[in-house]
Length: 248
Image 1 (tube, helix red, strand yellow):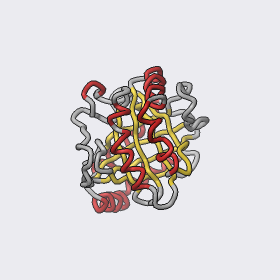
Image 2 (tube, rainbow, N blue to C red):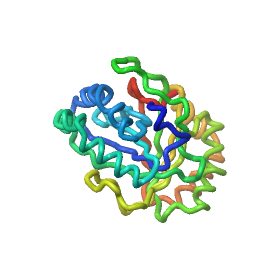
Image 3 (tube, helix red, strand yellow):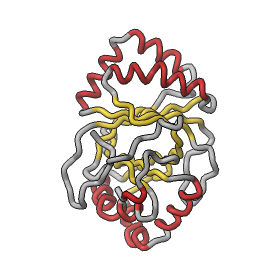
Image 4 (cartoon, helix red, strand yellow):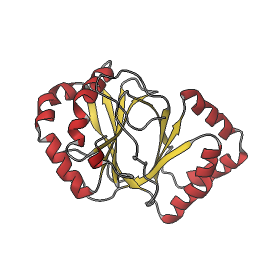
C-alpha cells in the first residue's frame, strides 16, 4: 500500500461485488493484481481487500477506500480517465456480467473502520494465497441506522461474535451522500449495516458458527437484531487473493 495514502481507516468505502462470466474470475484477478492496484493507489485510493467468494466461483469482491466524497470524485476521475484503465478496460470488462452491485459505506462510529496501518500488498507476480477468511455480513435495515442500533450491535452482538472466535475488522453504515462519480453506479434507496470479521481459516469460521449455535445468548441477541432487518442478511465468505492487503 502506498504510504502516502495510508491512514488509520478510510472514511468512505466501496464494497464492490462483480458477477463474472463463467471461468473468468482468475483472469480478472491476474489482470487486476498486475495493473490495477498501484495505478489506483497512485490516484489517491486505498485498495483494502481483493477476494474470491468462497460460495460463488463467478463472483469477485473487493474493497476500495477514500478519504472523503469529494476526493473520491477526483480519484475516480483520474483513474478511469487515465492511461492504465484505458489500456486494459476492454479486457477487464469482457470478464464481467455485472459490476453495479456496489455499496457506498462509511464507518458506523468514529473508530469502527477497518484499520489499515501496517497493511501492505506483496510484490507483483506473487501466487501464494494469504491465510484466513474474511466474512461480510450485509444487513438491509428497515430504517436508517441510528445510534441505538449501532450501540445494540456493539454491546450485544459484537462481544458474542468475538467470544466465539471472530476478529471484528470493522462495521459500516450506508453513506447517504450523493454519488460523486455517477459514471459508476452505487446501490441507492436502502439503509445498510455491514460488518466484517476475520478468521484464521474456513475451518475456524465453521467452528465459530458452531460455538454461536450452542450459545443461548446468541439466539436471543439475533432475535432482537433481526427485528430491524428488512430481509435476511447476506453473508459473504471471502478468500483473499495473493495481493489483498486485509487478511489473517
